[in-house]
Length: 293
Image (cartoon, rainbow, N blue to C red; front, side, top):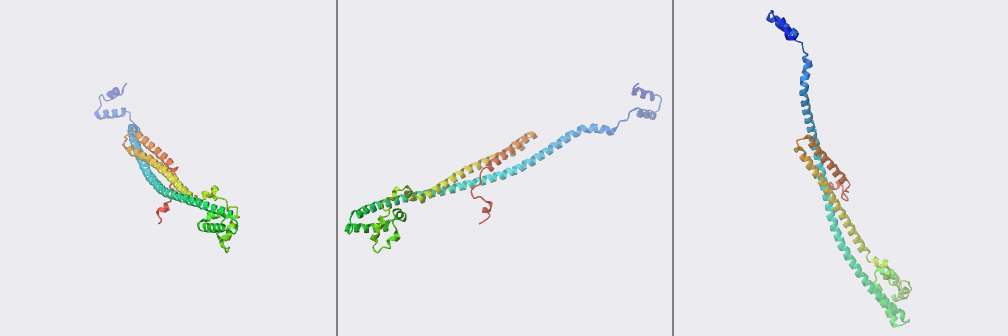
């Protein structure tokens, strides 16, 4: 027998109050407390999902803000250091050019000086032949001795005098300076041309070559600064790409898409940092130089 048949049977010939009591007793009681979670459980899930999504979005925005700040600082740093390299490049090139010009001038002067000394040696060797050709007490021999003395005393440089064995101090010890001539000619170097010695010829160009080497060194430094400035420029490009990616990340409505864009931006930033770290700082760079006079 069903509940409806039981209720109908119990309510036949009874009052309304008795019928209500009978119906209430016949209807099974339900546990409201246990039924409530069944109803709210389904509605809590969307709320929790929305809350979790908001937390994800808020966290992602914080991450974007942090990496935007870091990338902005890195961009400023790479731009500044690249500019310092460019400044060093310009100064090194300018100084190298000046030294190159100076070295070339010194080289030309050394060549002229060597030519003059070669002509001087030709005159000295000719007088030596005259002096040795004539016998003692000959006027031509005496004249050649005086000519040799004055020619050497007034025209020899110290380096050439050392090369041919001429002693400026020894000459003063003789009452007659020409008496030093036969003593000097006994020196093994007196009759030998110094220009047969490659080292002696190169000695004319020592200072000029040192100046040219310095100019070459500055040119190499300038080239290095130029290359390093270009490398810092490339690092700046990396960081600019990161700024672009982090900037457009907020335009994507889909959260996973935003995360992908941000992740790519972070990867590019790491690549830029690694690349920049391997590039040397400008020579003599120190922060203290910008805070001292």
